[in-house]
Length: 474
Image (spheres, helix red, strand yellow):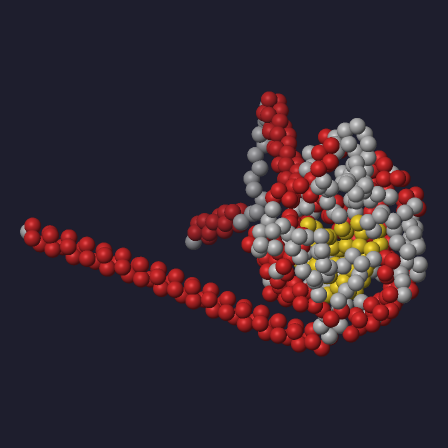
């Protein structure tokens, strides 16, 4: 019995010993060579870990740099206005004519004006100041009291757009000739009208133009519109030279797009909308695009509004399949707007900004053409209807002397009724398109099912023939 108890005590002691958490430690006498080897291995391991961390950080920085390199349009944080507008010179805007114009605008659908601020002569049309603007000295007082004008326009509910002529500037050539286009012999280039053009690669000139735009934003304009954002296209331009150092590998479309993005960033910071005027002929035309430097889809990604100048009189005979586009304003405008939609749709990416298209329409008679017609109410309403039928909603009318046929514009009540009818029409067209698409999908599905059934029947027939042939052989 005592022996059995002793054995049990030994077993318990053994079990308790097995439950100890501390592992057995063996003291090993390591040689100097082993210790050196282990130290080198530890250092190599730490180096490899450090190298991996560095590569990971560099990869993350590279991804961040690539993302930063992709320019993104900054959007103004304000409500947009559906514009139905007209163009006004500074002389008109600063004169007593505005009383009559505002009366007509109050009675019609018109709700916006585009006013020359930095016009075709290169002069700024009201008093503004900054160190650079003062240095240039282009400010004049054509509009003597801009704050009063802006207050009046706002009181009438008018959306205001400041027009800034960008790369054609004859006045700037007199004070900053180094900013202008130059021919091979160093002379300032002038077009056939004696107008000098700014070198689009000159970023000092960019700063000047954008500072003027920022001043307009501070003065209360709702939108800044850049015109002549392009290269001159006259034959003499083949004598103009740009150094490789200046162009830095950028072609015409690259630099024009770069300027538009530069201006867009600055004006978005002012919380003001931005638009650009472009040639209507660049739409769908590679030749015209590279000639003037206006890439339609690229510029549409950098502005809030694209304003293609699609005057029927400016299209050559045969365009859009029309013998004389000026004589068929509806078809000419519809053709241009549809071309715009197609061009932008080809470059559209989901989630990426693309500007609203607001075309310039013809509000003048092109009497210089061999075949032309008077543009009055009928022709202007045809143009506007074409804009709507193409799926666009906004437009601006151009008449250089500001002599508009006011009967061409609907009353506010008529415009509201037209809007309702247009919305109903578009809803019907959308429903019809969806129905047609569904019918096509169903037809395609039925055709696919019929084809599969035919294949299955053919296989069954082949198997039956093979079975019959095998039975005959047996």
